[in-house]
Length: 452
Image 1: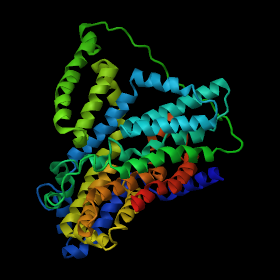
Image 2: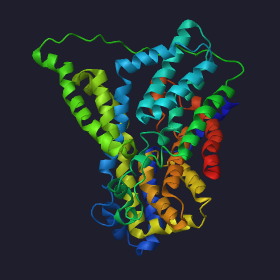
Image 3: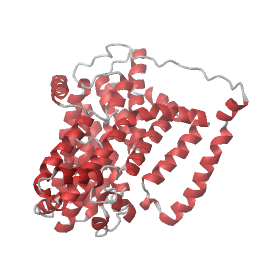
Image 4: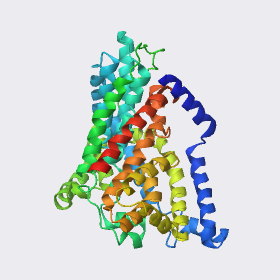
């Protein structure tokens, strides 16, 4: 039955849902229509708000730095996943499962664990591990339900925003970070939220812990009664033997001594920073710096790391192209006064329902804006304004937004594209299973919001 559900959902999505970039343009058009009555029906004023917002570049180009941070989170995580050390770990783990039950538990647990460190790292490791588990099982004649194993490799996107690379929590640890997204006026009324108040809070720890337990159980419950072996051999990656350097320039490019310069500088800066600021003030820049140093050190040469980054940058096109449109939408909403109006409307729900409403609203927005950073840029001002009006702790509302964003990744194919390409499966083969995960996992987030 689940296979039929997945096939039908895939057909519906292919028929009706355009590309994410087209959706970003559609949201821009919708913002224009909503803002028209609030801006004297002037398209010229709206165009000005789209490009420049309320002035000082608070429109189309206001998220360039933020977009670069998100690209680097994906790139540095992707590059780290390609190091020999991580690949060796993946190879060793992949040989353990002997049944679909053990395979989905292993792949889901590893994927979610690494995604809590860095979502790009978890996404790629999950894909590599799922593929390797399927390949080795096929070689050994072990019967596995491969689509369900691949589904397990995507579950990291269900917990990532509650981890150390979560876009919204990392962008709220200082006044400057808040100002980048909320604007100076709103940011002045909200104190910085340290990671102990967001990622390290009992609220987030309980919700994330529930996911770590519930997701493998749901995957095991979905194992078909009659398992089928992989229908066709997985494609083997061509192995390229490294060639010995033949010139002084090549020896420099492959030298381990070269990478010691940036790695050493990072450590000399990072250790004092952690002593004075603490892990609670971790932000995207510091996170990227640590991932950069780890990737350089494990790759062992500038050439190897640059080649890994070159492969990783192909997955950043969506962020690069769409973030300016998210920023432009925010410029229209802020200039027209809709941010404050929508925030006031949300505040009417009361302090008990506001976090729950924020969760479901974030889940709906994520279907059209498949980016945690872009969603924080668009929805953040709305829910922070509502939090102030209602008297709800801003950190609580922020985490509700973060959870909603990651929740509907289970039916949003945008971030599944790297996984599907690596594992050589169509989206329809996993969509039915991820839909079930979507329906069940909502309780992992709603119950803490209602009880804690």
